[in-house]
Length: 149
Ligand code: RB5
Image 1 (cartoon, rainbow, N blue to C red):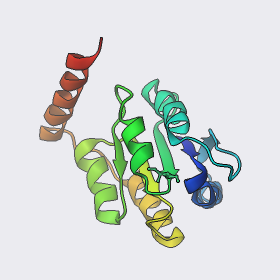
Image 2 (image 1 turned 30 degrees about the vertical axis):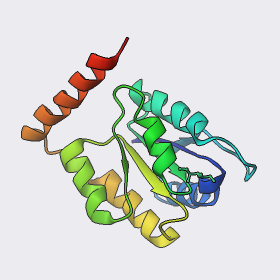
Image 3 (image 1 turned 90 degrees about the vertical axis):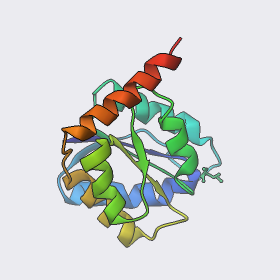
Image 4 (image 1 turned 180 degrees about the vertical axis):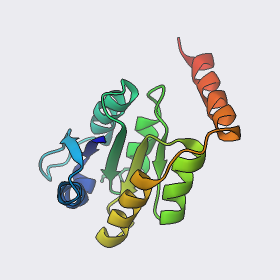
């Protein structure tokens, strides 16, 4: 499993904790920045990770900003990306099982580090259930196609 991670300054510290956590579990990842706490713009990092995941260079992405909201909204503009903002472990496995989410978004200012790492583990270990859920995801793709120029 290969993971792409990214954050803005608001998610920089939590990204570092997640990087340490993935390393400790032997999970391969690439960090697409930001690389310091200087103020920056979350869409820049959302775009990098979202494109890598959409191109299937990585199985999953993890994106963090202060709330997780801006960075997930941005990532979801890339066709093929299903970024899920999660602040609890139920949502983390349900979004893999039902939505086949390929990016997990987290808010550093919302969840503590311990919970965030549990959410990461839960998300990465859950499996898509297919069947009726695939039909619904296909409808999401149809919406994307409708608005693609
Ligand atoms: C940055 O201050 C903050 O706005 C950003 O990290 C994020 O929370 C936006 O949704």
